Image (cartoon, rainbow, N blue to C red; front, side, top):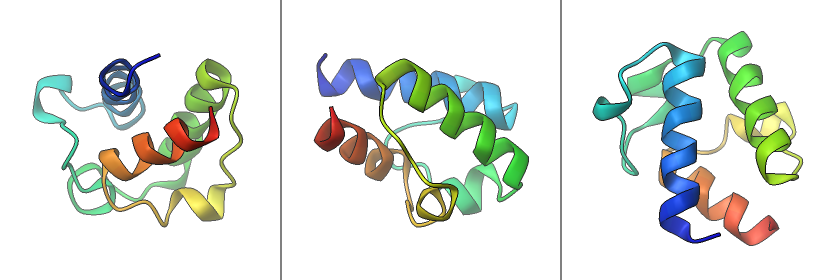
Length: 79
C-alpha cells in the first residue's frame, strides 16, 4: 500500500472519528488543535487504524502524533 493510499484512508478515519469534513483534513492537519482532544474520538480513530492496517497504537502514543502526516509515517513504518 502506498503512502498516498494510507494518507487517504487516515483522512477518512479522522473525518469519521472527529465528525469533520474530509476535504478539510490533510497531511498537515494538527490533530489536537484542528480536530480535538476527546479521548473517545482518538480511541475510535486508533481502533480503525489498528483494524485496517494491523498495527498497534497505544492510546498514550496516539496523543504524541502532532499531524495526520506523523500518524501516516508511523503506520508506514509499522507495516
